[in-house]
Length: 587
Image (cartoon, rainbow, N blue to C red; front, side, top):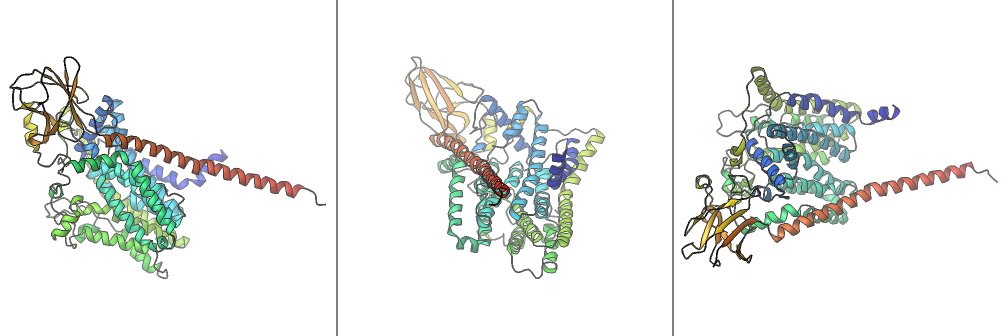
């Protein structure tokens, strides 16, 4: 009982946060149907497809063979699905997909709040600052928008790990690198969650380093530590990073040729007015394109406390964070010159200016936590209370209307319709990871047929996406065949004759970027076997990644557990020696 009392006393804040999560998020979400969101069908497709790949033994999944009526889609090579293994396993265990999605959504929300608290505690060494960081970062309007309105699973996951990367860099700069490994781990986790956010995270880590540049310049070893982190990051993310670069080198895709940058409007069209930026309501007004809820009132609260309570404080890190956050808010607004072609070309890949809101929220939370750590106890209590209220209002402005809508469905018995069966396989978003020039409508209408420049071919398709095509040799059988598969680097085609002799066949992009297999080397009857066997870079990078993770985990275990145990034993020995010395009678 005494141990339990001590545990509650030492961890009452985190226990209180867990209780609030249970009462305010978990239980309400469990009482209603899964919220529909902007991108939910795309992410449900990813979950369902990954579950099928796991069931077929295709680990790691490079393609979703079953997506787009079996044409296959290389989403995993561009959009990491490491953490989607969780809902996919739930689906394989028999859980309906909407429930698996909801379960994963709840996990992400709870993980984000707890991770924010942990990172705030480690960065600022005060429980009050940790609470402020959790309630201003994780309990924020933009995170709520990602979770409950946009169903942006990728950004939702990235939200969890971005603070971890910043904690690692903070540790290098301010704490002799005690938690340096969080930098590569956090950045790698963001990369495996959402590619665009990972690039933005790397940029803003540089901004964070510039805020603390004096400390870095004074100690070159810290710069060396950052370089080591960069190397570790490359190694523990190799299985995603190198195959991605290989595919991008092989050909252009809709995600990289500029077409996806304006698929949902230009940056100018998706910018926010100042009124929208600070409002907790979704003020789309008369604008053509949807915009999220604003960031709320926290910036105003910070300014008041900075110039009233902390007016005697010299320029500090919190000021740098606050300035950075306001600059980012300026970039989100229509005051920024988004109409200039230069800025559209430079930032168009992120699609929406308000995607920067994640980092505006992060730096705002860092500023709030830093200010809190510098306040006297009485002022800190007031500040923590106001920061928590501001966070809850911001989060609630998104969650409560959405919850009320679905709660009303429960009262009226209205059922939400989700895509089922093969229908969900056609939801690939805007098709960003299709090769440039691919016409999606033509693919849809093409059907599951093989087209050749000779006689028509038939085929059978295995559960794992492989194709077996019987070949009857003749002079008019044609020189190639276009298969109902989207071409990505890594496909192989092998012809096997009746005697078991094998010939590798050349492949390239066919009509509408389907896989074209050349038949010129075939001189007898047999079977063409087509499979996505992957590339040498994919295989090597995967095992490199596995080995790097094992070595890093082993090093962390040794340094954080074994070293601490040795230090404890040494301290205990010194204490015992001192006690024995005191007990010996004086001569």
